[in-house]
Amino acid sequence: MTLPGRLRPWFRRLPVVTRLVLAVAITMSLVLSGAAGLVYWRVRTALDQQLNDDLTTYRHSLDQAVRTGTRLPPGPSGSLQQVLDAHGRVLRSSDALRHQPLLTSAELRAVTRGATVRRDVGSLLPITPGTLRLQAKRVTADGQTRIVIAAVRRGHRDEALRELLAQLAIASGLTLIAASYVGYRTARAALRPVERYRSGAATLADGVQNLRLDVPADHEDEITRLGHTLNHMLDRLAESAERERRFVADASHELRTPLSLLRAEVDVALHRPRSAGELTETLRSVDAEVQRLIDLSNALLDLEELNSTQHITRAPVELADLVEAAVAPHRRTAERAGRPLIVDAARATVDVDARWLRPAIGNLLDNALRHGQGTVRLTATVHDSALRLRVTDEGSGFPPEFLPRAFDRFARAEASRTSEGSGLGLAFVHAVATAHGGTARAENTGLGTAVTLDLPC
Image: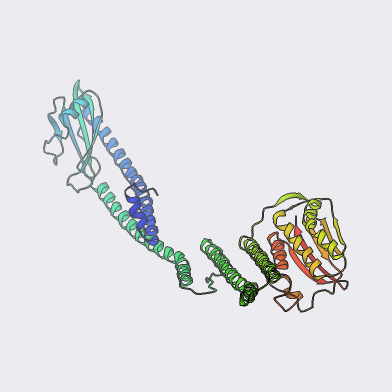
């Protein structure tokens, strides 16, 4: 339904239920008007056809009587007749007409020229008495021009049409009222869940935690899908709020130790005069703590970026080149520690996000070199469109109680938070695997530790 330009702003300001009811009412009015008009036209056409047939038959009998000079025959009930000469003088007429001419001057001239005139006298609405339908035609009798007029009363036909109009108006009005009521009830029922969702969202704005909307599980319509979408959005908001809370809590907790050490080093340095060597040693300690703060901040920001967006950009890359780029920074560390670093990467092209996967491999190698023992081995294989990365060492393995939380943030096998490392390496690895739609797992093999990544590629 298209509204005129001036009505659109007013219509849009109305409540949705009111707009729907108005739309239903207007549409039903148009439909009912069309249906009523069609019914009225069909009935009127049928009545007019019957009336015209009776009138034509009656006029033909009058024409025959005038030509033969016999008495005018009686017509249907309520019929009238009149015979005029060429100048419009009434020669014969029904008693009810009392020599009142039925034709106008223009109609008389038209009939005299040979035309057939058909006309209604009186109107359907408003009601007028003495309504007629007449038909006039020229006839020649004894060499003289005569005009024969046959007329029948339309009273029964008009009364039937007026009754039909009244019944159609009543039926259409009742139907419109019923349709508007049903439309109102339907709109209210359909929008009731929306109002419930709005109330739920309002309580969320008031600070309610862990809110979920009450969405029926046995429905599958647009409103239900909206509810599921809103619940999904609320879950994402809750996850985002939880990540933010964890980020702030973890960051404040982890930054406290290096900042405290920095403050202690500075306080000791300022407590009494120090030699140049002592100040140099203090500055080295401060530099180490600052670097630790930088590494921790970068790790937190990278992990938060990956977890908050869950978005990766896949691109084809040579697996061997990717692995070599990740391993290269760690070869010197392995040489200084006197530990073999063996890499076995398949010659294949994989569809991954190298920006995130490369540091994830680096974190696995760094953990193995820092906390493990013996040979560190990295294998990268592709099978059935799946990439498997596995890093093993020959150390004592993870403590059994640590394995279930190995990929948690700031989880360390050692209890002390002053131990080497931030506890974010495996958490970052797990986040990269999840972002790729894969999995990460840690296990003790009996010969050491193994961390495996399985990624679709």
